[in-house]
Structure formats: C-alpha cells, structure tokens
Amino acid sequence: MVRVNRVHPQSIAAELGIEPGTELMTVNGRELADFLDWEFLSAEDELVIEARLPGGEAVIYEVERPEGETMGLDLEPPTVRRCANRCEFCFIEGLPKGLRKPLYIRDDDYRLSFAYGNFATLSNLKERDFTRILEYRLSPLYVSVHATPWEARKTLLNNPKVPDVVAQLRRLAEGGIQFHAQMVVVPGLNDGDVLEQSLTDLWSFGESCLTVAMVPVGLTQFSHLYTGGSMDRGTARLLLETSERWAARAGRERGHAWVYGSDELYLLAGRDLPPLEYYGDLSQIENGVGAISSLRSRVAEQARLLPWIGRRRVGVVTGTSMAPLMPELLARIEAATGVELVLIPAENSLFGPTTTTAGLLVGADIRAALSHRTDLDLALIPAETINEARVFLDDATLDDVRGDIAFPVHPSYDFIDVLSVPEHLDSRSSAIAGR
Ligand code: SF4
Image 1 (tube, rainbow, N blue to C red):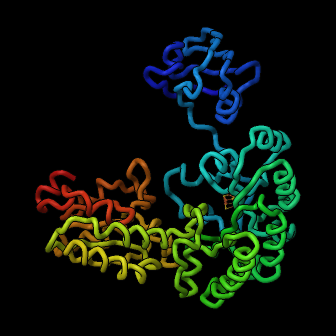
Image 2: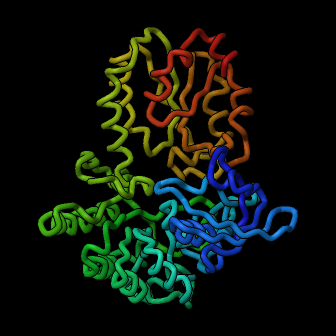
Image 3: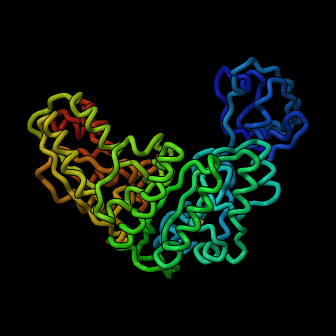
C-alpha cells in the first residue's frame, strides 16, 4: 500500500475524487509496496486501481489515461531503507551528538539511488530487490563500490556479511543495468593494489560501468571508526596518477575519461583542475566531481552579463579548501560589476578543522565570520549550507543567523545568482528591510 500525500488540481486523480490520505492498494491486480511500484505500474494507459479512501471506503477506479498525461498525485515520502554497514569513513558516524534526528539516518537504498542519484552499497539487496531492479530497469544506479576485492570491501564497510559486489554488479550488468561507481579511498585499505584491482574489475564491465569517481576519504573530528592512514598530499598525488593513467586509456579506447578524481582530490594534491570539457556530461557533479570547473565556466561566461554595481563591499564566505581558488573567480566578478569582493574563509566549528568543505559550514560559523563585521554592505554564503527549510546542520535557521548580522546575507551558488538581482543590492536599509 502507498498513501497519497497531494493531489494536483485539475488532474486525473482529482477528477476521480482521490484525496490526500487515500491508500492505493493495487494497480492492474499487482500490489503496491512503494513509490517505485506506483511509478512503473501506473505507467500503463489502462489502469484498474484498488484504493481505500481516508474514511475507510474501498473503491475501484478504472482509468483510461490520455497519452502523456500523468495521474497528478504525489505519494507520501517512502520509508528509507537503512544501511547494514558501519563504514570506516561513514559521515554519519562522524557526526557529533545532539543534532536533529533525521541527520543520523544511514540510508542505503537502491530506490533512492535510481530516483535521486544517492549512492548505495547494494549490501542490503534481497532477491526481490534484484527482481525489481531488473524488471523495472532501474538504470543507471549509483553504487558505492569502494573496493571490489571481497575481503577489502568487508573491512572498509565493517560488515562481514557484505555480498560480493562483483557478482552483484555482473548480475545487474547482464540484465542491462548501467551504473556509476564511487570509490572512497582510504590509505592503507583500498589504495595501491586494491585500487588497481577494483578499477580492473570495473573496467571489465564495459559500457555497463558508466563512470568511476575517486574520492579521498573525508573525516570529521568525531570519525571514531576510522583505522586508515592519513590522506596527505603525496597520497592524493599518487591517487591522481592512478586515475589519470586509467583515464588516458579510457580516452583512447572509449572516448571519455571514465574515471575521475574528485575536486577534493585535486585540491588535496595541490594540482590544477581539468577544464570543464574533461568531465563529459558531469554525471558525478553531485559527488563533487567537476563542480569547481563547472563553477569557473559559469562565472567566465556569465560575469560579463552582470550589471555594473559600483562601490559596494560584498563578503564571500567559503570553506578553507575552496578559498585558494576564489581570487581568480572573484576578480572576474569585480571587473564586471565594480564591487569589491572580500574573501572570508571560515573554519568548521562543528566538525573540526579537518572538515574544510564550504557546504558543511554551520550557522555558528557564518555568525562567527560575519557578526562582528561593520565594513560590508552584503555577504554571500554557500547555498549548500542550508536545507530546503533554510536550516543549517547545527539547527540554526538562516533567519536566526541573519538576525545577528548587520547587513543582508544571501545564500549563493555562484555569486551571479545574487548579484544579478538588483534588489539584493539596493541601499543597505532597503535590502535589510526586504530580506
Ligand atoms: S553505507 Fe557506509 S557510509 Fe553509507 S551510511 Fe552506511 S555506514 Fe555510512
């Protein structure tokens, strides 16, 4: 059974009288267990839907759906499949105590992998799940492989029952499923020979393995499960040598790089990032692969379209790993707009100084960076620091933080999104009133 959360006005579902709270039991005689069943079974043009209205009344809808028209309903969010691992580097195990509960949910859900590009280890897949993946053709999936040698993977995932991922991927590949792979590399556990074997195995899947991201392990000061070595500059350079050697082969034989070092790996290695074209269709950008090159390209193309703003001082808060790359970007925007951009690198007070990513800064860090300043007209903070409800990881809300700062503060993805909107740059008082 799946439950309806929202019915779109003037939709087929609205015409049928389906209401929020209606339970959808079967479609064309097949039971609905979750949103995937609904999505795939309701794709037919002729539907017989068994349902129960919120008052308890059982109803059967017979629907002939015009081609291309959706039913027009949203389901309640699914119960997320929990993970059975305790990975060496698990970010959730590395969270401090006392944060809001949803942050501690360790999901490992192939359904979300297909629907939203979340990475899943496949270690909790049951036979029924394989059947569904193959029947519904859930492709591509995003798979946290980390290591293909079985013993190494058991160690990395801290899970002696983890299945053989090579056999799992082979079964999926033979069923026509493609996947993107991620390798979080832990020095001493899955670099060196294990990494080489893993890339060899993944390469052997041919076009079924679409891309591989090589990501350096990232730890917080609370990462208590970690037994690996330190991810220093020399290790990062060795990893990039490996990824670029494989990428060169892939470029020759497959026409694209196939394996990509994450942006963080290049920053750690102190190496220049490849140009945007290197990253193809940016299929792992959400995994921090090509994000910086994409930002650079956007700024290069769009800064000249910004309006001339003139003498304003705008603070730009970022994490310590991104800070060295910012001057080049900010200079382009200064030249186009006439504003003075003041770079403000901030340390992470919640996760500790080893966590340098801009998107993990918390409300307290933004306050600490900005609340004492009197020299700015406006400040931009990384948009990734807040969720859809505009709440930081430390539970501070954007409005709370703004209340402690004497000038407007705007979340921004690329500076251009804020600076291209004239209202954000009105006089200080009107901007404050309108924020
Ligand atoms: S799969 Fe590993 S990293 Fe992901 S939530 Fe589970 S323990 Fe954490």
